[in-house]
Amino acid sequence: MQNKKVINLFREIAENPYDYLRKQKTETGKKMIGSTCAFTPEEFIIAAGAHPFRIFGESESLSGADAHIQAYGCSMVRGMLEDGLSGKLDFLDGVVFPHACDSIQRLSDIWRLNIPSLHFDVLLPVKLDTPLAQSYFVKVLERFRKDLEKTLDVVISETALKESIILMNRMRSRLKRLYELQSEKPGILSGSDLSAVVKACMVMDKQEAANRLAELIDVLETSFTEKKIKRILISGSVCSHPDIYEMIENKGAVVVWDDLCSGSRYFEGLADEDTEPVQAIAGRFTERYVCPAKHLGVKFQMENLKMLIKQHHIDGILFMLLKFCEPFSFDYPDIKTELEKMEIPFLLVEMDRHNEVDEQMRTRIDTMLEIL
Ligand code: SF4
Picture 1 (cartoon, rainbow, N blue to C red):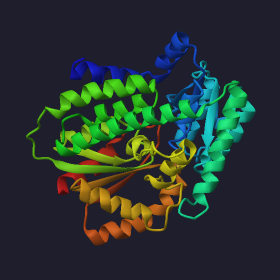
Picture 2: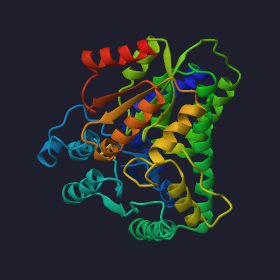
Picture 3: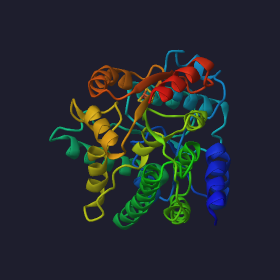
Picture 4: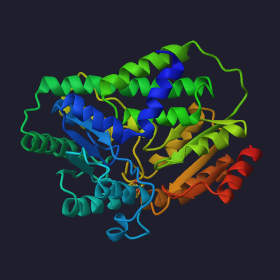
């Protein structure tokens, strides 16, 4: 398949994820298991013969969710609940709630009481840098495995688990290679295309995703860009506004990397294929980049940002704060102080998942790009 065709396929799935999933269910008969966060151990779901996917909160407006979550709750969580209440997820069999932040934990309770589906809580450790975190994580994953086995009436064999680790690693490595290509040859893909590819991979059958990624990479490895371009990093929780990428590109800049749950945090880190499978999955979660809802040492978030700035020769950073996301807001003041010392241009924009990018925000982003 040619470059454009593969990208269009990813875009179509990213734009209509639930249509794709409904069709998958009809064609494969697999149970559809949604997840609410990048901390979901998808390997177990695949090894159980089910289809994992990310619930994004596709509803344009909120009505049912407002009766359960206050307006000052995270809009991503409210959007996911709206999808469940409104019947958009009519193909859904179960949902996994990794206890990442308070908002997702409360969503789990509300969902259990209001939406009939299989329910899996994964009680993650909060601190990941303690000697007990790894062994606790292994216990949590073993319990999740048993829950899946009991609820779906299957046995998750060691062989199936190892195979799903290899498959997920393959897909993650290819997503990472795609990002590396964007960093090596900025603008080789538009930011909105790249973001659509990651989103589609969170939904697709993982083997299909890995195959399509390989096709895309083959073409891009031999493509070139000549442009001298300002290199931007986007950091935050999620970016659900593809027009931000276009706005940046119209100003002669390009997003060469991100630190987002809807981006690199989905694929960063591989599970060790030579280690016992449950240990390997736990190891990946405790060692990879983590979101601000988890603790990996007081300096982790800043050190991680510094590394990304250096590795990808970043000229400016756009922080996208999803309104009312407390974990991110707690980290930001320290990050701001450090970046000011480093004299690297940055801008924080507060967004609501369901609001359009308004003129005021557009002007602020344009101004930052102009001063780079
Ligand atoms: S964006 Fe923030 S508040 Fe919302 S689910 Fe993620 S960590 Fe929780």
